[in-house]
Image 1 (cartoon, helix red, strand yellow):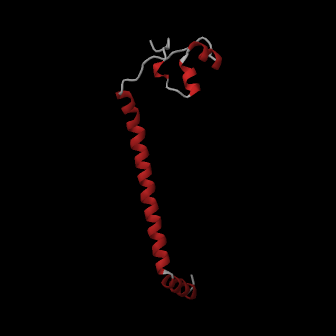
Image 2 (cartoon, rainbow, N blue to C red):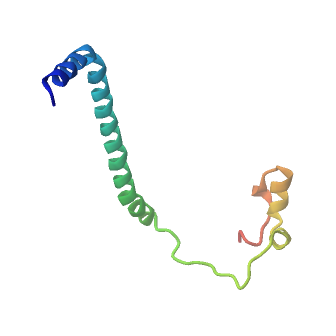
Image 3 (tube, rainbow, N blue to C red):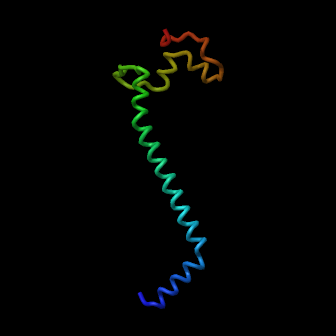
Amino acid sequence: MTPLLLTKLLRDLRATWDRIALMTLALCITLVMFSGVLYTWGVISRELPRAYVSTNPASATILLDRALDAGQIFQHNPCFEFWLEGSSPWHCASPFLD
């Protein structure tokens, strides 16, 4: 680098010192926030499965011979009619709730 270019660089830095300081501060804040997001993601990905297992979830999976379509579901469960009408299904008698 020639002495003339070095002099120009130093003058430019001196003239825009506040802008450079604010950009540096913004980059530092961005890195801190990004680190916080990564840390939170790490904690949640570790703790969420542990919290789920601590609720004693069901340990069985129901497998059907064939999939049910919407007509079969409505046919076998009268509570869906209340949902379609917009009323509360809690007073209906469903064979699946027994």
